[in-house]
Length: 225
Image (tube, rainbow, N blue to C red):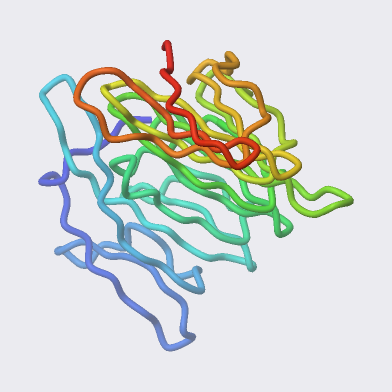
């Protein structure tokens, strides 16, 4: 599908007498038919050969399902979601989507599913070109958290808490399981065993240290990442 540049067409939102939404251009030509229950214009950042463009797309509701239309009326993201959220911290490239009360992640540009609609909740953290997804899954003893990136699973959903840290240009995770804390690097390699009562990054100028508490004793532990 050809992506049209933002200056190629001007589209104005309209609502007809039946309460349905559609879009027409400046010449009065119907570009998107009046058959949608809700519709919102959203600018998305797209990298073209000519440079970066911010293009208009339309997040729309039809038959109780949300999807996204391009401004020539073609379906860009199919109408199969009960909710769509644009993740602004990903420059609009990623969408958080919901189906049957479960959340997933879709790449808006490539229109690929990054994470299926399987999770109770998803938090997204972006560092440069990297993104990490802390997910929650339902378990018999309460929701458990895991972490993914674009490549797939980094840590399984078996932790009570996960925090992402960016220290000295290094990404690592502290995790809690059964009231004990440990640490992993951004690839899921164990850095510190899950045996500490608390782990907090220490403010230092060069190396990465964690303030650890174990058996009422404090330690200063260096992370080798």
